[in-house]
Length: 133
Image (cartoon, rainbow, N blue to C red; front, side, top):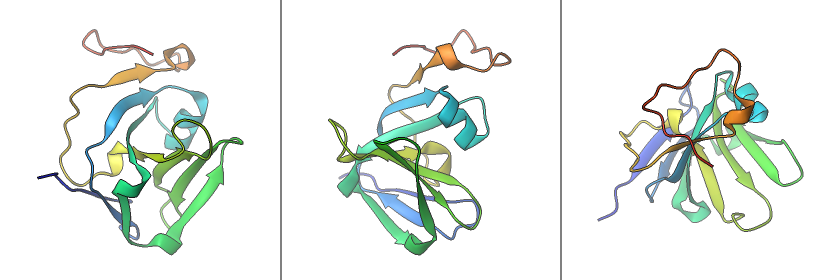
């Protein structure tokens, strides 16, 4: 039986569930992810788009096109970053979930730090972090 994961924004206006376990877990240090999260990096896991179901607050989700091919979604009430996805290309049928919004315990099997060449000067990963592309 597949585990169902649930999540929400800070104010709980938006709630969602995932019918698939997030994969491709990454901690992204690119400028857009850092700015969008207001943190040293953003943590995401991806699921097929059809595995994401918005339970409540769909009208509270706004989309920002951060590039021609990438859209980022957030809650209009509290500003929580929720998802990002590609509109074209190989992964257009997948959506990446901001893992900090999960309410269900999730322990990834594998994870990696990406775009570490863009990391802020004050962030120093611990020796136990695996870095990779």
